[in-house]
Length: 578
Image (cartoon, rainbow, N blue to C red; front, top):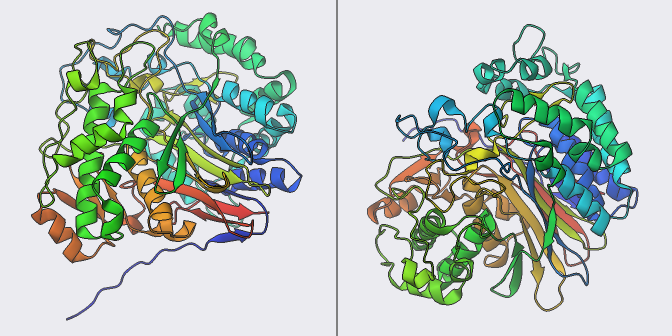
């Protein structure tokens, strides 16, 4: 039988006797490791990387967005710094009238809204939290002055980021959307209104962001209140209000990042620390509990039976997510039940070992919920229409030489966020309002001051016996983040894989009606899953698409050193050790 050529992609694992960082761009990784080399701790490095990420890949994250940070250090309880985007106080659940058109793949399955107002434009903007979160993390857990950690990103914005083919592709992918907003087109496109292109990679074109450099310098000099109460907030509010958005100065001035305990799960002899509430962390923990009850770990890495049961666990967790998860300060949310081993055991007993079943959310009585609200995306399941679950997000992981680990996922939500750049600031704003279900009367419907249901799920793993950090990991990719991170956790804990092998192993994804499965899986495995009722959709990762989430991770070795890995299918992802 003949053969055909095949593109094999790989990336080496980084190793260090000291600290390590892993990020989606070399610029962010270099700034982070420079902080470690100068004596800063993991939080210091993460704060500097946060701002650098927003400059190096402004379409993925930035000071106009939000996110979560998980921290675990020697002798320190696991801690989460929460800085999500929140709805402005004037937001109302009927603020996005439905258009009557079919659900848009770009909307996570929500019904389409008139003029796409929750996808792009000023009304799609939620109040950003990144600066508040980084300032709080720096104050509580860092060792370096906050301003010193902001300035490397300001310098990078001033001198410009080299244009790669990935830059050109990203600009081209939403060229029409960028051109809808003159300031965004002016800042991010070339003088002809076209994507930047480097004709000579030895002398690349550069995307310079002088307005953003000035904004970051002001924040470095005056602190976060310059953003939330000063001229930056005034410019943002004036621009958004002029287009009919409900934002006020009070929305910015009243924003607070918070410190919480997050979620911690005892999973097969290791602690898994992540974020809780209306986030992907809750779904990740529920997935692990279901996998445990189904005995997935003992069936072998990526064996057909293991993948079948894993897929059932993922689909059940998604069904419960769509039915129940939302901001618990606004609606009853059965967080205790969703993360309870007894509930996972009840659900697992109903899953056949040899065929896929339709996932059904836990009933309201079992969940202890009395609100009577209908769930979001109730048609989710093996028989529904496939829906895309992409996103504009970045992740970075850090472990310093002393064993402190930080895992951060931050985002603008969609690629290029709202596409709105605030004139004079260089600040690209999020479209966090798209995370809300636009249909009134559901748990995750819009409300003033409410947190939308997010997909982020950064993770730190530590030893139960000593408390020492094992790994920091996370990924980007919208709803695909949760299944990716769950499999990385299982690969590290259940299969004892090193961080590169854990990341490089082929994966599945159940965030759509199709079971997305890497073409690197054996053909027999794919056939076996199809025979059990899974609507398998093999995907070629070497095509550099967005079929799976894109991870970054760092692991601590037994001798106190570190190893780092970055997604081989994301061209700019980089891990660097001290």
